[in-house]
Image (cartoon, rainbow, N blue to C red; front, side, top):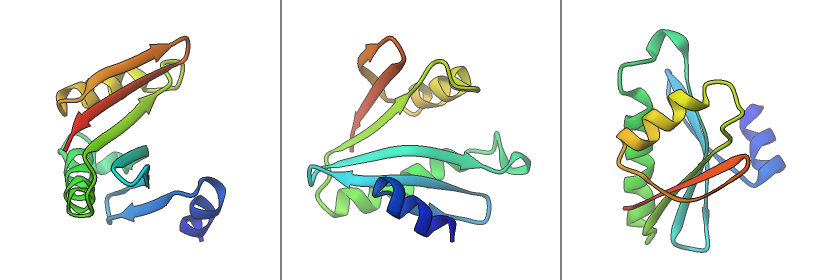
Length: 107
């Protein structure tokens, strides 16, 4: 049911495992936009988020995508942890404004 909700609400797809999920969409035919990543508390700090994004990146690359895009709102809870994870994943800041930082990575 939640997958249908996300697909309808924001035109997002859901990649789900038993430990978490990623909300994403392919846009402009060559960009994988990651909207949200969630890992259940008991699975955190085990590289699960990176593994899920790796899998999506591989699928997107096979479909012709060239960029991975993620945005973070610094005012959100856990934004600092998200930014640390994103930078450790090898992404770079593409642009930033008052309440959004856009990160990109070639895939």
